[in-house]
Amino acid sequence: MTPDEDAPADFLAALPGVRRLPPSDRLPPALAPLPPPRPRQRELDEAAVLTELLQDPVHPEDYESGDTLGYRADGVQDGVWRKLRRGQFRLQAELDLHGLNRDGARAEVGAFLAQCQDQAWRCVRIIHGKGNGSPNSGPVIKRYLDGWLRKRHDVLAFCSARACDGGTGAVYVLLRAARSE
Image (cartoon, rainbow, N blue to C red):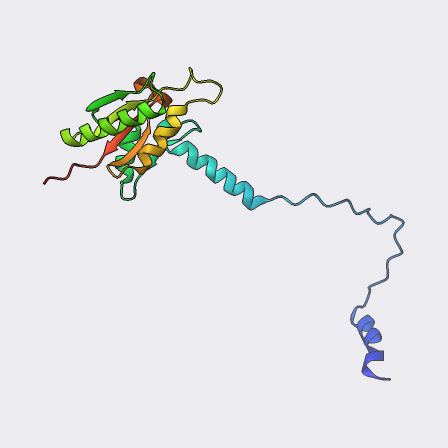
């Protein structure tokens, strides 16, 4: 006999008093379907985001909606931008474009901003209106003003005004300091 053939006999000899149990009359349990996997990490991430949102005070001025205007040139600091959006700069002049067509409004904006540079005014408000009197196309002057101001070198930043200053019908404009000659 080889050692492998002696193994069962040696095993049984090592276990005196052990006897084999009769076969069970129970049925094996049916395997229930496994529950679907839970995306635990995603749940933890979503909970962390909710906690973070609830901890930090949120200012409505920090969010833009689709009808607001906003632009800031390179180099304008976050604090300056935030202050402009909150209307915390003293307004030094104002231009109202109500009733003007596109060409008239463009001429008025150019003349107004030139005057602002001459007077060394840094923060002004331009009222363009909400376009309620425009036929179906919405605020025409507002769209043009957005493009005109973005192209001007003397404009550092602009954004829609607070509700008490005209809301989406007006913009705050922050101008570069006039060069001293």
